[in-house]
Length: 489
Image (cartoon, rainbow, N blue to C red; front, side, top):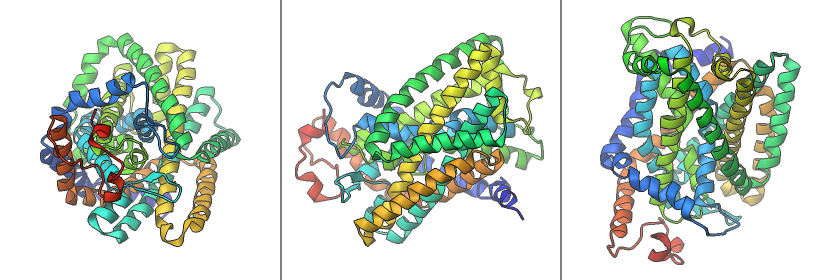
């Protein structure tokens, strides 16, 4: 059995790890946390917008710490890891292989995923520590170690994060390559290798600067490209306004439909729809993986809840805004009878832009998607690096440095290879690695949910004026130089 066949088997909805058990675990965790936090994503959504976007826009001065990044830079790094090919090619792929109904399940996963991501971020900031460089480090490994007291599980989480960083990098690089060669009409192997080499060199130059450089690059590129995509998407959707009602209706109509891409009996067809929607949704917004919490932990923001609200916003923007726009672009631009599971996702997405904008659409798409994918690779390089640092922490800083250099070198070299690998292989590799990474993280989220509830209640009680000791860190030494006035605006 070939590597590709093994991956296909592992990701098949009836037998593989993306079958019903995984779907139930991920969705069930989100539902459980949503009820524990009393639908925080709904109750506190106005406060989330005010505390994040509006507050960030109003802020003139931010804490300047060379060892950390601002809340917005941490958010930009985190969301750059999620806004990528999953939002455009991933959504297109979900529609082609699972039908329009897959988008409904993408929304469902995102609704509960907002609280999942909030929980991850709160725990990451609360249990984070400073490394030998004086930088804040956190993520699943730290709240599993210091919250659950299960260091062996933390090591497993780090290993799975390393695998996921490779899987995510594979998809992003592969889609950068296929997008560019598809736009210029030349799919020669040498051209794909050249594109992969250019991406690898640029990635290497940025990740050498650490989280500060990644944060700076991401905080510039992600908002700019998101706005550009939003404008173009609205124009495409408006130009196809007559098809819009059918597009929206089809999402709900086929959510439980017997006929999805490839057909099949009720159980299998429905499973395909849900599986594709859930897997592509999690690939896109990363809620449940714990990956984005690694970036959020690097912030100079001291309040876990305030940074957690950025986590809610990240999933909202990623799925309910960007992914929804993509789905409406595809569903309003094409007659669904002309599309099938064998259609090439990248070609379909490019056509949606070129049908409206002509050659300009191809050029615009060939810039927007690669930039999204590029920033995602940056974020996952950072996540992998922090996992390596945790694994080799007990061996000293010298061992950490050597291991980190080896990881970065391999990560960059593999980027060149991913540019020429078949699309199905990289998608399946990513799906497998995502499931592996989420399992230890979800265990921690469930068992530490009471801690998150207490931290959340403490924050909002203090916002109302109650005189309580702030719950901003699990360690007393981190509280010495913090005051209540510093943390509550």
